[in-house]
Image 1 (cartoon, rainbow, N blue to C red):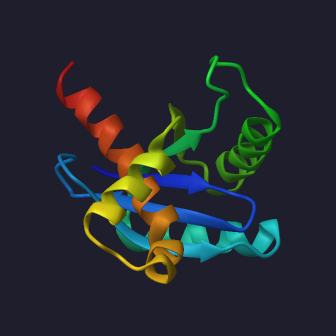
Image 2: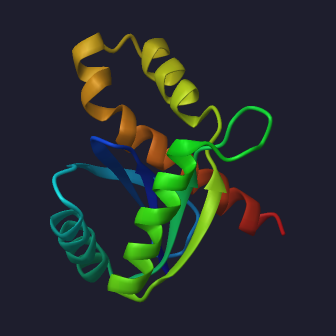
Length: 138
């Protein structure tokens, strides 16, 4: 079963995919946001190409666990994803995933320009891998 991981932002959507057995996550692309119908079309194509059966979306929360304006925007867009694609969707607490992604890229001595291009894809990979690790340990 292929699972798609998403890091949804205002300007981009980082996208990761699981291997067919659901053990590892791999970043595949970053979608540049335009308007919702086009963003949904891009996601549908990816889901069709990989035969995705489930989507895991990062849910940005405040450090105290509450949902802020960005979390509400993500949930609103995820409702559109569910309505349009008719694929099961779950949320994953994404607190600190972007920080972890930046840290990993800094440790890899990646340039600032390159980090900026792939941070959302790497964050989506962290989100999906966290989910995969949880289900494999339960």
